[in-house]
Length: 217
Image (cartoon, rainbow, N blue to C red; front, side):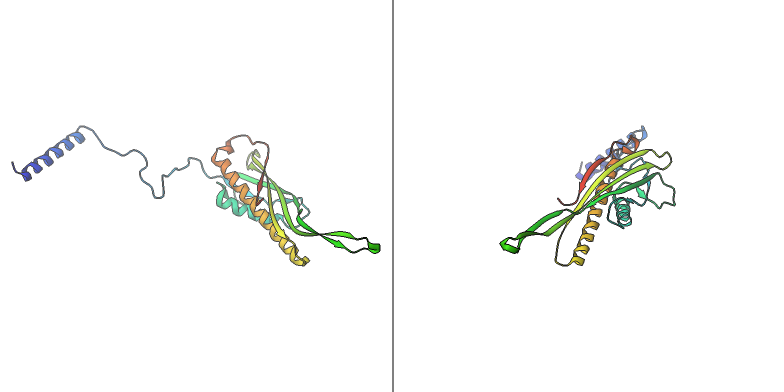
């Protein structure tokens, strides 16, 4: 028997065996969802909650923060909170409300400069070199239909800025630090809410509000 004839016979035997297996009801199949681009897909069986974020209540001495801080929350929750942010005019599953509790501007560093006085006595003047904005925001999320509280959180954000001899420029630097602190708070709250959603926290009773710090130390 030549090599070609032997190869033909082997192929014929393999084909007969395969036909016999399929004819007897045997099937070969691959378990699982199959390959996916970029990794294994893990579709969620829970719908994405629709969330309304209402304008924060400003209880601090700093005016005009409520609109900016609310916009920061809407932007961050839209991009990374596990919820779909919708306008107040649309139907929603959840409603977020909150308050800007406080804004503080403590001195971070200063210098002491001797000042001349009468009779050979003098004093010391303190000049602020660096300050910091510290903001505290409290929020809660309720079910739109039942008003049941499903999540509460208190977040703190801070941002430093230097002090110059120009008072107007100092105010601009402080405003910028306030904006940055508000963004830190919004990012922190969105990421924490995402963890809450992914862990099934929306189906559990709300725990007492815990505080978190956001921004550079």
